Amino acid sequence: MTYQGVLTKMKTEFSDPVQYYLIFETDFINMNQLLGKTINIQFVKYQCLNCSLNKPIYRQGFCKSCFFEIPQAADWIIRPELSTAHLDQEDRDLEYEKHVQLQPHIVYLANSSNVKVGVTRKSQVPTRWIDQGAHEAIEIVEVPNRYLAGITEIALKDYVADKTNWRTMLKNEIADEDLVIWRDKLKQYIPDEAKDYYLASNSETNIHFPVLHYPTKPKSLNLGKTPNYTGKLAGIKGQYLIFEDDTVFNVRSNEGLVVTISI
Image (cartoon, rainbow, N blue to C red):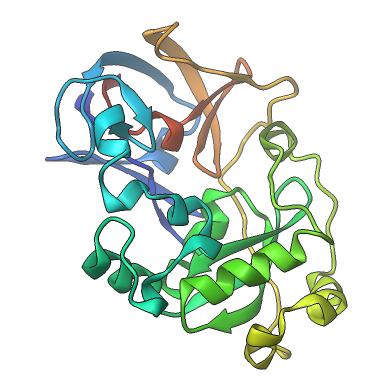
């Protein structure tokens, strides 16, 4: 059976274990059903997620010109503390920025390779945690806009990590942590503007991933260098496909690539 389409990050369903779906324009694949099966991935061309042209992908699934023009790739996406819609100030497209920035946001702790702090829209819980490969997570504050979440994250980064080690996450070399204790310990560092939004009584969320075999020495598949790869699917964690030979493929970092997948 063969599928072809442009890669976008896998859709997920929070269940035990997480269900993963690769969505193409006219079809989809339940990736969990492919565990233990041999898959061929072949690079076909590029297709920018904004302009749809066959131009090399620069970042986030966009070609270089789109990346530096469209609001979906503005700096405040990665650095929420740069959000200005709450001040009625435009960066690239004020209507879009108000739509995204002026809605409830969560500052959270997630344990994927270590305990880290992060920001996401409330509507993206627990999807954001699943995408990061976190096996446990907890909310710290729920604020009404992205700016407040951003300055809270900046304040907490002095006391807890803000990055995930993808190799450690994929090898599953992770110790369980009591995130309630971490949350309470970090409360004192929340900025004054966000203190009233502290969440004092929630519990941590636990996430289980569909993995038959974790890699011992994960090596990343680069379709630019290896445009045709065949391997047996051994697991899915975060946005990574894990293969039996320790090859791992980050679907999200390959957004905008058109591929053929044969099973």
